[in-house]
Length: 86
Length: 227
Ligand SMILES: [Zn+2]
Image 1 (cartoon, rainbow over the protein chains, first blue to last red):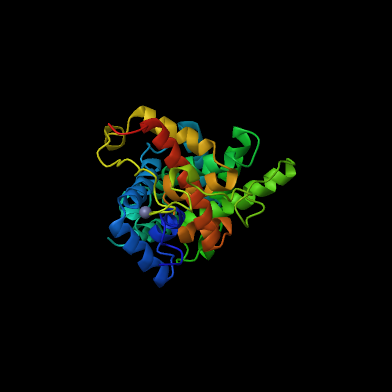
Image 2: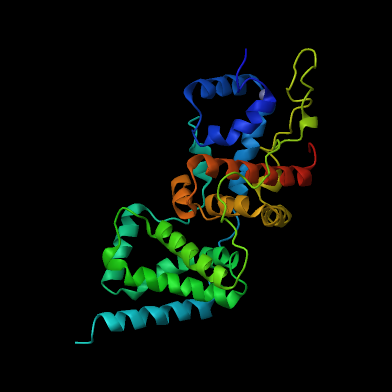
């Protein structure tokens, strides 16, 4: 009954390593065993997952037309230099 | 439940499948402007945001982004198929932005990449747990956190919720914010973030963990208890 992954206060600090699959096998199985029995930590893991999901859920930033035009102009300059018109 | 599935499934659909990315690179080599426009549309907003962290003004950030795209075009013939365009772009962008920042004598964030910036306490308030000497369940939750699964604010994502998260992100220490943005907002993989920022896998995870934990707390503060 010792080692990291035993108490809730340890588990909450291991959540990201757990989600990233970066725990050593022993710690990982202790965390899994803990999560199977602990509602609080199971909810906490879900909350961390949801946090990541909410971060990715906003609309992508728009690309403003002047910036797009500027980059397309740069592309045309590059293409013109590269392949001389035939 | 496999370990990554929850996060991966929720990642924003802002990346291209590898095959279509290779097709785009091939198209760029042929001088296909539509392919370039598509890539520009996909990556430029994130690039502008990242550049803006390093340089003083919007116009300098735009210069940095343009320089990066031109560098991609000029390096196309040497571009390795193994690298993804996205990783390449962000890495070159950061190099150019850092050089500019030094020229502008700005403090360069992400310059000291080890550790997590002196922010090394617990990520959850110790008061949430029973004390270490508690009889019965020491260091276990004093009261169980509330389940978010059916919270309408998170199911439908209210404007208030998105705003809360945006503000919490802005308030993170620099390195945590950069890692969280690249991973969770821009959808880069752990490997890509390590390659772009020159971080070890362990450091990347520490920064991601601390950043996500703070944002989780901000969400909880808004939800504030059970329905
Ligand atoms: Zn627990």
